[in-house]
Length: 414
Ligand SMILES: *Cc1c(COP(=O)(O)O)cnc(C)c1O
Image 1 (cartoon, rainbow, N blue to C red):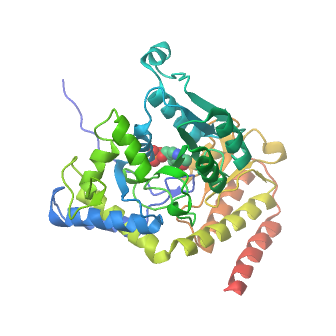
Image 2 (cartoon, rainbow, N blue to C red):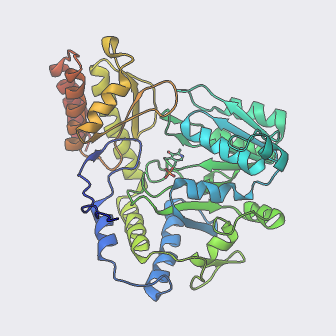
Image 3 (cartoon, rainbow, N blue to C red):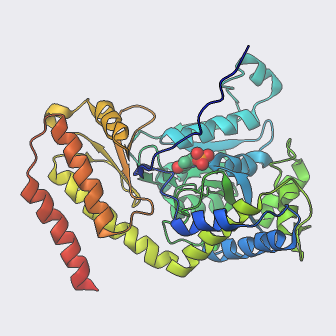
């Protein structure tokens, strides 16, 4: 039998205009490609990891010693953060979309007893985990958190900061305050907000654990490093309970980033084989974030999201999101219900927008690392063309005037 070797894999250049991954920054790609061949214990690779840890603390506004990054994607960081949740632990978790839905599944996997796993291996119903379902398209509020924590008095409370499934920002301040009042340790999925929103971990003392990702707000490559940060009380709890994992155990993992027994040490010790290329890319993405400054970047997201939002509203779309990196919308009148078809047409043409991944089907258009007037005009033009191709009649002068107004005001304000 003979096997014909496939031709080299060619992947075309597309416009990643979805909820994430965003377009990896050119500086990050360069850093990845120009890194020399070096093993994971080579001096500069280890130094790079230490510098990444320090930059991450600066960007995330925290003095948490246990601030580092987990090799992989957002779920790797989340799995690490949830590692401290043990079978039978009492948890209150808020679900308002696809991602917090998977987070609540992870929590049920961690907290389920063996009998609960045996009863339903793919969807364990852990009695100790209370999931509060918040309707798609709405946000988790302080009142909801307060009511649930008062009633259930959990050890852990969980919420997504920005729920990318529905494009909703949840009340971080209210969540943290309620956790403090009720002595719960807060856990936050910050996969979508880090690098986009200007916030500091240390201003939210009710939160014990944070998890994010490389390829959204940080403009880094997917599958490089997913940031995490833990307070001392989280680490104390972990030391008491243990965790059923080696790779994603914060205590073990932190050693490679030079964090041992709660102290920074000069260089890391082996945990697993890290990639000098990935370290170089991650390092550059953090330098980029610091150079731009989180406040300036957050302001740019607000400005460009407002322009995109008003432009799609001028096309008759109904926007239901409030994140600044993502617009989630329903199509108007005659096109209502054809959201999936429109998204598929766009994707086939190299315009990578997304549908929602859970009901109801909506369109998601993201602007990660697309923070220029030209990029937003391009996204608006492609989206308008796709709507016209499906039979929509659009008021082009109104769309243009909407964008002109946004960008003229922005120029005037500078
Ligand atoms: C993207 C996302 C995830 C999953 O991240 P991966 O990098 O795909 O593992 C989890 N939570 C939220 C809120 C997200 O936006």
